Length: 293
Image (cartoon, rainbow, N blue to C red; front, side, top):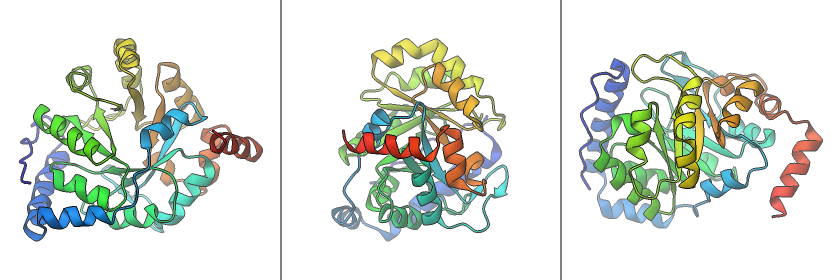
């Protein structure tokens, strides 16, 4: 069960290194309190896995949106004081979200597996568990809470960890969204077996600068290879307008993951519809088309 994570890269922002160290402490606590057998028992009662990858593939929107349920961020602290995870997720669903991302880190983002679990039983869309995964026990807990996909951050994991975590995630019937920021990280990830989803983070974890041309640069360099391997690409962070979504779609992005820029909006459903350039009749028609497949 025990699997030690890589020592944080010294180039990463101090707060990222602090999160990784604290997450190691959390993992040690989980391992102390729960046996592998007890984690497996939790899995037997877990909700059925929903196909995160197929939902993205079959979405009528290009790019489609993975909308994030998130209370706080590292750069802006508390984003939404009146935070109601289920209400937020429902508004996303009504607005046309294809999937939902749930931030489960408690100390730094004020999230939790309880948010994931609550949304799972009220919302039919596939769910991504977004956390700093350093050990298989976190993957088991995510699945037990109802996750259908799990985020893996290449910058904080070794090659061996990434490959092993991928196997665990796929064994449990889920999908992995592997996050990269540079061409070197992308090339590193492309060497692994059974890669299905890659997320390009437009925010640097070294200085927190945001540049959506990161997605353009990486896809310009590796688009044909990604397409030949059948890998779907998700652009993350720094996306605010329909024009931003169109820009990343033109270079080959299949989906976007939107968190802080979306959750801070007053009317989440309207914000979603505006991003997708939808009116009510168009959205209803598209939803019926997907259900009819």
